[in-house]
Length: 148
Image (cartoon, rainbow, N blue to C red; front, side):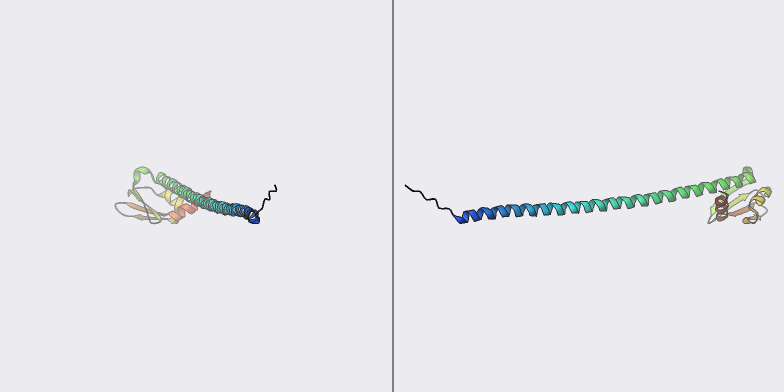
């Protein structure tokens, strides 16, 4: 007895098509994952740049704050020297108005040391009840910065 096995060409072609379909699906999935990875890298870079900009802004703010504190301490030191020159017991009031330091003193205060230190930059007004001295803050800052 002879048995003849008939092969179907369609099944062979179907296997090749399925293999190509699996390879194509794998390639499409790989491309999809690659795009997703690229997007994640872009997002990470954007976040890093945003953090870097925020750090730079924070450093600038801190630097400005340090400069403000330094200027404030310089002004306070200069005002303390002025108070020492006049004598603390003779001072009634000290105010900072606009860009001037206003010092109100007793009418019998000796101002020679203050006049020598500031000269024409200190505006002095004498009345019967008090002496008002006004010194420009810009002048104080410039003199302190030049001294350094």
